Length: 213
Image 1 (cartoon, rainbow, N blue to C red):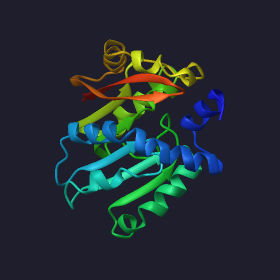
Image 2: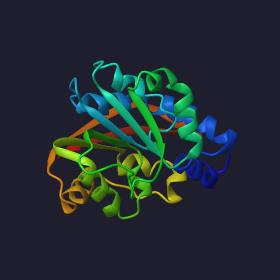
Image 3: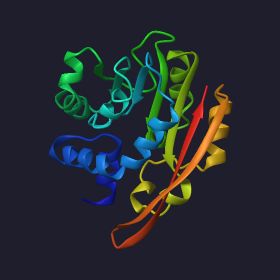
Image 4: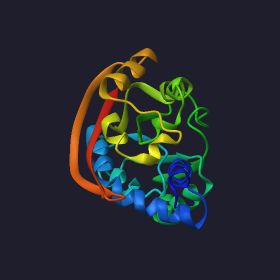
């Protein structure tokens, strides 16, 4: 897969290749997912929304915190929604999970629908992100918490495929973007991962997990 095709698949997985990319993201994004869920400080009655859940592999980590938690995932990849439904059918049957096809700039939910919202490695694709953040603010309950998690700009610059359609953020830029769109920052946690090799290059992985209200 060339770099342009990889960037497109990371943005919106499609076809047989998209299934492989979804599985690859499960492995590569495990730590940032677990750390983000930890930063949400989930409570027994939380109604959780994940924007851009991929194939729904980490929904089980949210639902494992307490049986009273419900989870909603939304993605604009039809393939990822289908994969999520297949993978989480038991939770769907129990009424604890649901998955929808849709976009972050027009969330198909009523105002104040969720107590916790998170999104991981998606803001890169949102342009100036103002409309998406407006929608997050709209569907977040008063007093609710949102978490935006990314790879740092320095990390992303080491990955050649990010030259195709990725907006890169450092910690300050992410916080400024959130404040400019009406959010109050609670914390920005920076966590490193073991280096990994991409196309023969060793990449140092730095994550930023910003929680806000």
